[in-house]
Image 1: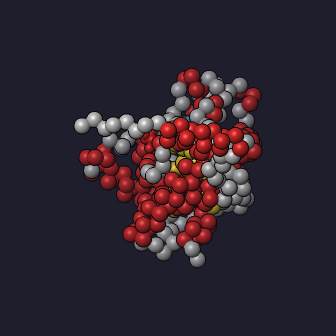
Image 2: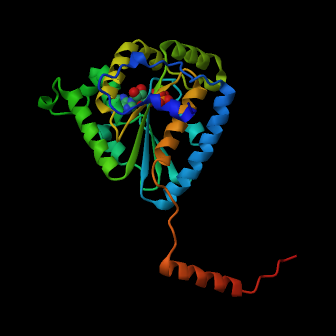
Image 3: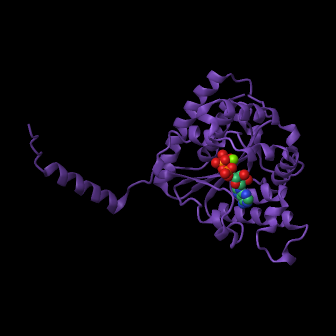
Length: 297
Ligand code: ATP
Ligand code: MG
């Protein structure tokens, strides 16, 4: 089976009955690192070609959402997969703990303003999905959200899932291609990466004590991720559950998913026809009629 086809097993388009435990964090589809890296290079090139057409055609937009536990490799995946892309056609937004101003609005407000224009790829490094992850694991964060009391009931998570599904369906109907990546890391691999951050001076800045504190809530996070995927994986906005214990494999899987999503659309450079073509001909004649300037010596 082709590698691209094998990657399809990570795509979840119907969340019903989804079980995280059935997804291996260390899967590599039988590839070794070298082979995966050369496939990634091909994928990055292909993505760059597709993005040029996406931009020129100016019809579709792409929203790629990244969610994961700390040290799962979101930043590295974004950096490597997007490395071939024209920066003018791509924007990355990172969403951290919300500000006071953001808390004065509905939970989608801050991300809505960052949605990609037509022709562009927008990347969300964390997103409104934090609202059913960290906020669910930490009830005190929900308490800070200034919601009217009577609206905060035990149904709040299923209501948020419903609103997110509706919102993504709306975006899809307006021409946004949505891909959601959950970089699925094992608890042991996170421990190893935290230790590495502590040991290597160039990585120390990434470490925060809070990250180790969150690790204690690992099971609660996994339950929240599983429930999120169950309720928000749809054909128009699938979740990609990417095995992330091997960074090189996670990057390849993300690139393959993006290539798959774009290659399925009929992306093409706009054709110049009719009067516009006649204008081009006129322009060519004028340029050719100009005397070439002499080069200064
Ligand atoms: P990352 O961990 O993504 O590499 P970082 O370490 O540079 O980024 P942090 O300061 O850890 O950035 O900010 C991300 C933190 O913000 C995470 O702990 C995340 O759970 C939290 N966060 C994001 N969105 C929300 C939200 N809507 N409500 C509460 N906390 C949020
Ligand atoms: Mg962090």
